[in-house]
Image 1 (cartoon, one colour):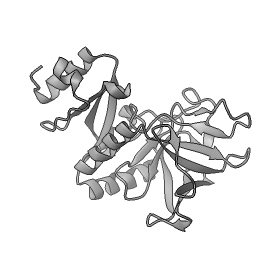
Image 2: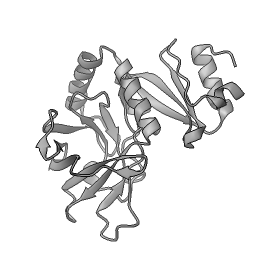
Image 3: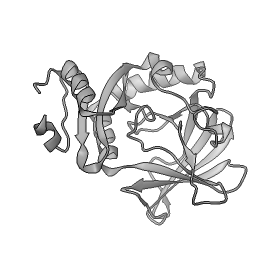
Length: 237
């Protein structure tokens, strides 16, 4: 047991489950597990009025960020207003490595993306530009520090009930990813947007070569984490 607590991170690839422990970061015990993509609605909670009461309803649900990154789906469940901003326009989502908020490709690239987010304490901070909350700048945040807009800036624009548009710039110029759509695959009531969902299934399989996605699980203590990882990957503890 002490060996694993000494390590900052431990990974296992035998059965598709990966396990991390990072007590030095205060982030606890996590596993990254594969799930069938078709079972999305049962394994990834969408943002709803109940779990995100201050979030604009136009961002309820689960969203497909349709670009080349290995973080295919995002749920803003639990996203809250920043109490330090009296305007109510600033929102702080949970970190991208937290349980059930981002899906990752079941690939080495997906694993690398999650583990990088984990150790960098990475998340996006949303700042809306007015009370209509239809246009926001999204600031990447690492180790609690917001990235300067002079380096990178990401804007998101409301299009319609099932679509936003994401624009990416770096050093004042459009980034290679450019503009791309952000599409709702699950609505705020937990119902599939069937057309978008089917498109995402095809896209995910073509990009990752897998019918599965990776989702993180956080464990309250070492024992439950170790039990899961031992059964999944046959570690000797």
